[in-house]
Amino acid sequence: MPDDDPNKPQDQPKPLEQLRQLFTKRTGTIAKDAFLLQLFALLAPYKWRVIGLSLLISGAAALGTIAPQFVRFAFDVVIPSGKPSLFIYLALAFGLFYLLEAALGYASMYLSFAFTQSIISDIRMGLIAVCFVSRQTLYR
Image (cartoon, rainbow, N blue to C red; front, side, top):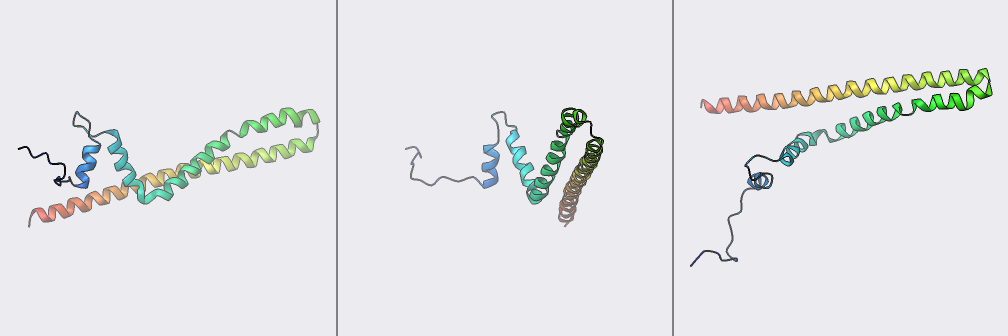
């Protein structure tokens, strides 16, 4: 008589094995989803830094789309009015805008680079710690 009783408890695979089965293709290679799962697990401690950097980079990119509005304002309002004070105000506003855009662009680039280097450093230190511990236990 076969052992196909549905009420009999089956051996459950371990959680890691369940994940591996879930994210393994028929060819036996790990799917892209498994890589993304590992990436999300790696970046989980840095969640707020990732969100903050994403907002900073998005804000810096959004400011780049506002610059043409100064030119439109100059052609539509300032030049037809012929008032020198409007030219001065537009030049000051555009200069301040350019400085703000450059500062945000530089800050996003610098913080993104620093964030990437800190993650690489943490991974490297974790790997060194694992290798050192495994080497210690290897010779005991």
